[in-house]
Image 1 (tube, rainbow, N blue to C red):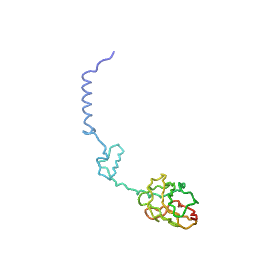
Image 2 (image 1 turned 30 degrees about the vertical axis):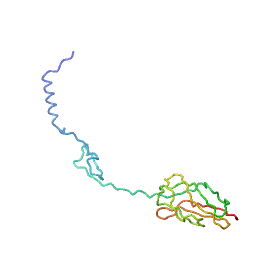
Image 3 (image 1 turned 90 degrees about the vertical axis):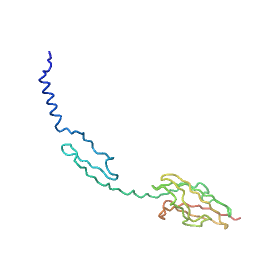
Image 4 (image 1 turned 60 degrees about the horizontal axis):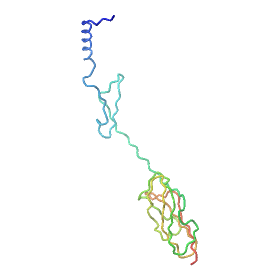
Length: 182
């Protein structure tokens, strides 16, 4: 049969607990610092001691920012959408030439990108014009409006994309027509 503890035993137990409660237990529990406690732009480093206690003052370190790497411009010619090479046209015909290309670089084309005539006659088109905006990896259509020359012959007008620094990039593309006798 089980006996109930004596009042003397219970009194000693309560005294023991009261004595232990005042030792080594902080009045306020430790809360580790958070990002909200730190000034913007600093990194908080907290190292625990061998006993597991946090140091009294945490050192801070300014982060080292790495520059974003420059993107790489790229253009891949995919196909002629209108006016295949060698198309026969009449003198003075308006020509609506379209090419399917891909922005094969890591740069998004914006207003700083352009197309420039690099060889052959301009066929009535401005020798430099804006490149249609396209995100990296997207397919795009390039459209230039030309006018066939009045003189019979074979004409080839070549074009190249240029980045905002004026550097050519990607595949060159062209229109090639044959102007017939009137």
